[in-house]
Length: 125
Image (cartoon, rainbow, N blue to C red; front, side, top):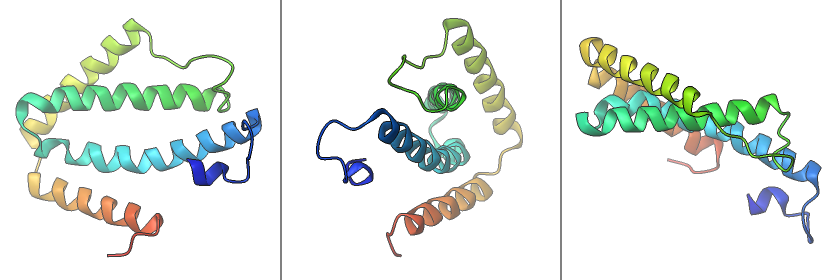
């Protein structure tokens, strides 16, 4: 994030923080997509926890977007009820992927997304 706010030599303005958060969330979306598609490759005991955590953090990003990236005004969070809902969805997705998921197709998709992310951020293959 430091390079995104490199022009600031003092405490960043609220607007530059909003802009930086917007960029971070745009990048995070690609990582969520790559990570989500590779969850089926994890150990069965870890999949549900990782899927639930991904859903919760993505929901926090959605809330920040709804607030127009104004993260200095208040803290973005997901309520306990919201977390239960996201966890339930994650559990259902885990069951569905276990029944119908193809590890090879998912791994290939994950690698493709990861490669594109690296290229987008200046890391050549």
